[in-house]
Length: 144
Image (cartoon, rainbow, N blue to C red; front, side):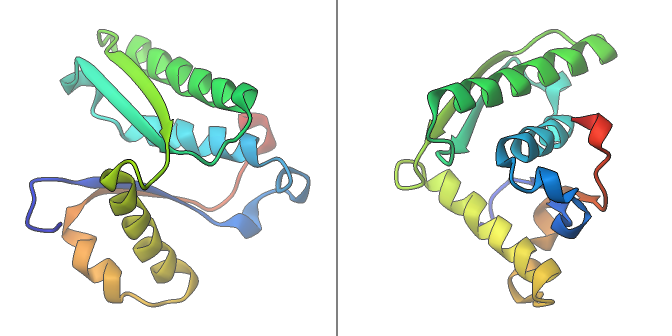
């Protein structure tokens, strides 16, 4: 993985900083984090973007809301910077279908172990490939 010409972006959320009444509303948190991830996309360099999300949302209505949030955020970002809209597709799939999702799980696990368990062993392996790492230390309710 570290020998490939790839880079990663990640958002780390301190769940203790989340309002307790929002902890039970996972979709809101997922949409919020998705917004941070869109900020990390190199939109000015892309004409076509395919976003593959691990199939954690089982309800079609929730998946549509999630997809619409991502698409709105991409459009807002393009408008803000005067960038042409890329052709975006969002797909929800299992990690068994896409090895890239397995890689994302490994990266997320490495970052989780660094922050939650203070174990840097795997993080050190991927650290040189991390393009950006956004730490969200608190959430403001009005951002939802």
